[in-house]
Image (cartoon, rainbow over all chains, first blue to last red):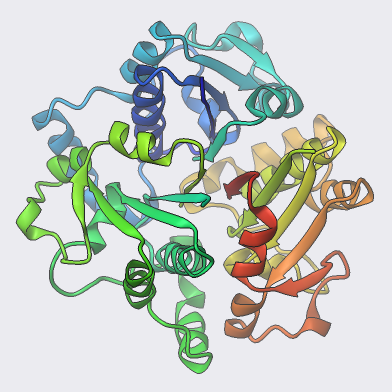
Length: 133
Length: 133
Length: 133
């Protein structure tokens, strides 16, 4: 079974959507999917309301995108990650980034399986495909 | 023959240039290159004039970059992709993103070979290297 | 020995930190690490003071991040790359980007091992994992 490992670095909603789509599609194809959430990405994986930050260059297109996603019934990145998890995907929070951002294990959204370091993630990703998003 | 699959997510001209360079270099080396254009990237793959959006952080450097590319005779990303295609590269538009952005198949630039979903792309990319740009 | 090849495209300090963490972690695990610095990334690999550019979307979080990194004793990306190099990692500057930005070989920071083209880098990366950061 081939592996797909995704480093979810960005905290903007466009890239989170890509993380969701690829994790879900990979898991549905039977790939061993793992997502390693770090840096700005982590801001969306704590308990409570999720922010919807747009990249500055494309801020003007935000409403058009959101409307288009509704019209096309595209699920939210969070829903897609939940579906990926039901098919076996794992979601890890980066322990170093959590430390820097003062995020404790108990602050994390229940969608997160564990908190690990970059070395552990690289080890798990070994021999597979990695994406930095 | 090794595979190089590029997810062209970004719509800024700096990253499009990287997509062009890597696709062209990979194809010239005999790699099986495929480019999957999605989200903001797609805004540059419709018919008509191409935009040249700069990342906000580096906007001030835009004119210097453009001038440097002219001086060094660096081809445009579009020209490089055309060359890659002549050496066998394939360019796909993401069907979900096209739906969200209300882009129809007939709106796409002729450089695009087909419109496919993320799962089809992951399948084609299997066993090779993937870049998210 | 598995290979980890990192294209260091971005010039913002958050992504440079990720390049440092992954290069260091990979080298420490015994992976064959190579970093190919191009475009905006190159602005941080010339001699002299390094800039600390933040991504526009997250500029407001900059001071919090910097303080958190100090508190957690996270090394700078430059220190992490130096450690990676001591464990065998190689750092290459992209010759095309250097040309465009008018950067000569003698302008490069001594941390850079050599100046090469994209094709050479892809060749060295062949069969391993590649990240575009």
